[in-house]
Structures are given as C-alpha cells and as structure tokens.
Length: 203
Image (cartoon, rainbow, N blue to C red; front, side, top):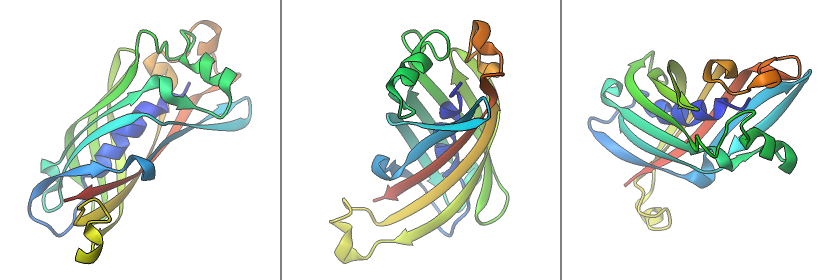
C-alpha cells in the first residue's frame, strides 16, 4: 500500500539530474536530516500520510550535462512510519510489503532527460517485493547555493548545497503490495502518491 516509498528514493536520486551552471560530474552527499521520502494513500476516503526514515542514496550529478548523471537508492522497508504502530506492523507484514523477505525498495537510474533549467525526468528501474518496473520520475531543482568559506567548516566542508523535489503516483498493485483481500481498493486505495524532498551537499 505504501509502495510509493520506493519511488520516493528513486525520485530523490533522480532529481539530482537537473541542469545548472557547472561543468563536471560530482558526488553529492545526501543530508538525511533534511531529506524526506514520503507518501500518501487513501484509506476509504481519507488520505493517510507516511514516510520511510532509513534510506541511502548514491548521487552523481552533472550540472552541465544532466544526461551523464546517475543515481542509486535503497530504502529500508521496515523503517515505514505512518504514526500508528499497529498500522506500521501491518504494512510490514506479508499482507503488504512482506519486509521479512523483501527488506528493501531500490531504484537505479538508466537515463536522465532535461526539460529546462529547473526540470528533468529520470527514468530508471524501481524494485519492490522483487518486482521491477521501469518508471519515469519528474524532478524539480529548487535551488543551488554556494557556501561562504567562513561557513564551510560548520557545514562539514560543503562548498555548495542543492535541493530537489520530486513527485509521482504509482499503483501499488503493480508491485504486488497488497495480497488477498488487501489487493482490493475499497479500503486501501490503489494509487500511492510519492513526494520526495532532498537536500545534498558537494565538497
């Protein structure tokens, strides 16, 4: 039901592919404390929000040539948090994610296409519960800021910081998230909206 998470990370990485005025590809360190992989899915008629708190993203962003950018992401399914312990345990169970067998949601980019100076689309393979689908992730570059020399030490040596936002809607049933009666959509909606806000730094 919360299959969106997977995308979420994928998104994060994907965003890193937007155009900007620098001519070399670089590794960017994702700031987990300022990054959110969130999702929303309907329960009857009420949207229920959640997030995944444990994830890793390897981001190589070429600001001059986004097509050369790459991203890999992995999300720990067990880290799902919907602010309800009983519901979180159910989401981890075999009824939905089956976290005991499929512990991670992964995304690996295969290509990136720039739309304009602040928008791009990252295409890649999203894997959830052992099912892999090719997805397109729209990405928005929120901004890039150079860090003043006097503040770089305080920022862990970062010379610049960039922020991205991505969003996507997927059908959880495409990834077998929801089995038996839970594959129906009367109680838990089929569409899952993923929202990713990511901050990364370059040294």
